[in-house]
Length: 159
Image (cartoon, rainbow, N blue to C red; front, top):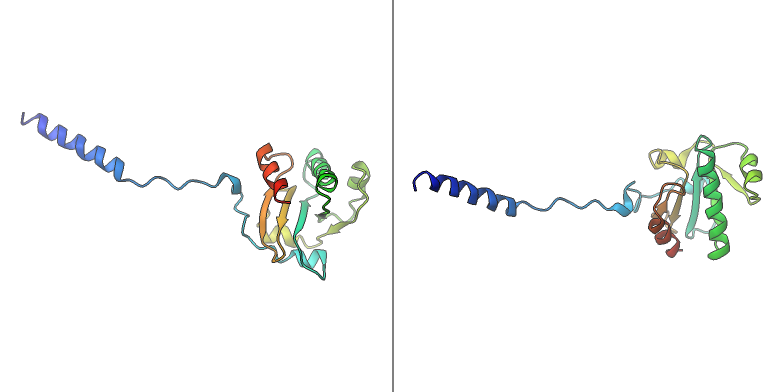
């Protein structure tokens, strides 16, 4: 009995300590890039809008894969058709005419010559759609070629 008692005591204490441990913090899968709630004040230096209102932004870099950029243009057209909303497309490329022609997109594309937006977002993965409120806070985002369908649907439902 003397030999069993320490073993039972050890088992009891170890089981009790397992229950006392707090559960690990759950990672917010919806914000894996940690962008929601972050401000994008540099947007005003690129768009130069007198009235601030909610913006849908497609941000891309010329070194992004071609199909990823094309996918962004496809979603831009879907947003225009289904939600009747305009997406502001922003790039650091001086002449985005090739992308415009290839995707048959003839709206204005804004040029972020100093790459301010990506710098402010710590060089976030692109292309990326951002939903930005009138105070320039990110409300939601998705990556055209990398996001899951439910993430894209969530984004679209907020428009």
